[in-house]
Amino acid sequence: MSTEKAVNGNGKCKSGKILVIGSLNVDMVVDVDHTPVVGETIISTDMDMIPGGKGANQACAAGYLGTDVSMLGAVGDDSYARLQFMSLDKAGVDTSRIIVKKDEKTGVAFITVNRDGDNCIVVVSGANATLSPQDIDVHLDILDRCDMVLLQMEIPMETVCHAARMAKMKGKTVILDPAPAPASFPEELYEYVDVIKPNRTETAMLTGIDCRTEEGLRKAANCLRTRGIREVLVTLGSEGVYIDSATCGISHIPARRVQALDTTAAGDSFTAALAFMLVQGKNILEAAEFANTVSAIVVTRKGAQTSMPVLDEVYAYM
Image (cartoon, rainbow, N blue to C red):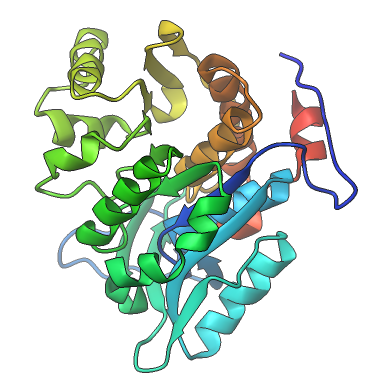
């Protein structure tokens, strides 16, 4: 697939503006031989402190691709926040809408990565848990100026619903990455979402349908479509992505074959790359092909925001 590279004088791609509303964390990443089981103590020889959080990861990935992107979220007044600001600034993300909450701590995620590149994550929400609907309302002007809104589930559910509702009222395209999938998902939220991108496990949680087979995937994706979502993309890791689209029908795009080093932020980079293409007017299949390539690059590198490719790297890989 070829994609025209169009860049304006500021080094940004000629496309619409993306607003990411979500979490900002600092990731404590520990390499392990295998994922520990209950009661097991294992030894690691390496630990890295890397900016992360699903919202910030998506903003960072979109920024490196050349998107005009702003980040709206909350951090504490601490050194972790400064690390996050530095990372997002480096990616060209507008950080002026990140709220510094002096009585809170910046979110932290503890991540173990095993020798196969698979990870387990424990998140301490910190300031992310305080991002409120009122915080969204204070920044409605940036919502007015964007074309697309990206949301995830590492901020309070009421804030996600409010942000999606306001975005839809203003005619914006809403992309939801329902991770981590909540035990109880508000039906109202489906009304405001145009594109949803769960992984296989999250799809099963959202629909109650076993998604381990192609038939199960078909039923689950169709279930999400019947709730009003036009574009359903179920990411399947090494098996690629399953798509049920109102515009392009049903498709299964295989993953690119790579040697995974660390799967952290693979889903976040996919979502950001998908938005990058859609905001330029590409269809969902073109966008998913491109996003597959971006996430394939990301899993061959260590860390979250540190693994995001720039646009030239993606084109070289394709």
